[in-house]
Amino acid sequence: MMTTSSWYQSTTMSSRHIPMSDSTDILPTSSGGTGGGGGLDDSQQSIQQQQQQQLDINMDCLNIVEMTEELKKKLDQLKAGLESNNMLVILDAITNVRSMTMLGGLNNSSNGMSSSNSNSNTNGNSNGNGVGNGGGNNGLSHSKKISLEIIDTIVQTGLISRLVALLSLDSPALLFEVIWTLTSITRASVDYATIVVNSGAIPPLIRIMVNSEDDVMEQSLFALGTIAESSPMFRDALLHQTEVLSLLVGLLTQQPTKRLGVLRCVMWTLSTLCGGKPYPSFERLRPLLPLLYNILASAKDQQILGEALMCLSYMTRGNNQEISIVATSFDFVPRILDCMNVSTDKCILTPAIRTFGNIVAGDHNVTMLAMSYNPLPTIYRLLQNNDASIRKEMSWIVSNIVVGGPELIQRVVDANIMPIIVNSLQYDDYAIKKECLWIISNLIEYGNEDQIRYLVELGCIQSIGQMMCQDLELVVLATFNNIITRCPVDSKRYIEMIKECGALVYFENRVKSDEGQLSISSKEVLMNFFNATIFASSRDTDS
Image (cartoon, rainbow, N blue to C red):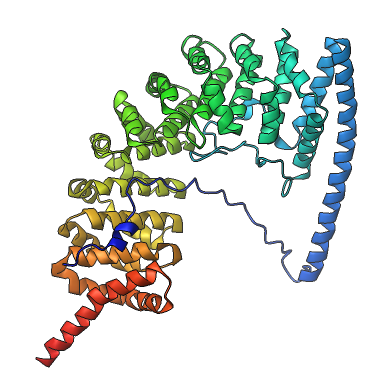
């Protein structure tokens, strides 16, 4: 049997891999045709499209000019009110300014907040409004361009610090409007968020968060969450104020009679403090674990439950020690599996699956703990979910389970999961095929001969052969290498099967193309197995 070569060891992926970010939404497309024989030809359609685009640009410019002029009048009114300290004038002006910032979907009301924080993922921050940091306007609708132009105009007046100063006043109506306006500005770009933070907005927002009417409290929570979401630096600045987490936890545990919208906003704010890259300090977040467990055990509201699961998914993406603390400190695993079994709502299902997957991706003891709750029937069912993103996450989980060795692999085999995997490798979406290839690669590396033989009988060699493409060539080659080396009794038959799927010709061409490591690795496998087999066959014939 050939020893495992260094190139293969460097190619083999650690099973504790984190999947790519969540799949991107696919925008619907329009055919643009009119049908029948009376439709416009391509050149006519192109002219009409260019005319419409120019009309849209003209309308954009006209609306932006009109709205900017109106805004300047309101900002002048706001300045006059501030100079004269006339609260009625200030309130009227700031209400109009806030209304203008809401155009184009830059609405900061927490009622529009997604329970699963769908515009961000576990791998990074997003400002949640489709506007990239830096304020670029390319590709935005004219109404969003107007919103950004309005916000830019407000920032350029230098009024931000004066708006922040208004947070010290005891006027709920005024505080509500001022905080909403500051949140709109923060949400527009990280540069604007920096101006708001540097103007001293965080301390008064924390004070207002716990000492105000529900409407104002809710808006201040949303403002703080938006600040945390805009930049890891601001998130960490909030976490380093030790009272912030305790105050948020207190709002949920000591004032459970608060309006549901407030409690939802508290949980969303907590999830923004747990998210982002680089990851926040686990030790600062660790005091949240009792609260999160209680929510998983008793929460009736789906949005609050979804945000709690988001927090856990963030807290289990770090090192093995941190994952172990979460998995063993409380009885989280069965609660998470309950969510995976009962809920069909993606705001629950997605973070529950991600959290369970992160736990399975911990060290061997944590993986065994997770497996002790018999998750395989749940995994079997969700691998056949209609949602491709869920199938992809579940495949990633299986790829981490099979690294546990023959015992765990046999449990996966007995659960009849591998036929689904081989079928998905052949017919499913490409992103899912990649995860399934890693499942098979890991199983072949860590399984025994009987388990590898079972996989081959399911048709895995033919399915693997379909994955010979640019970004997976080394993985495919390493997997074929392992099939041959780990099953010496069946190696000749497997070599013929690999030839039949076209791999021999493919990798011979790669050797000829001389493309670095792939060429070297392909040559090694071809020399050790395929040429040796040909030589042996000719010698047998001569005899």
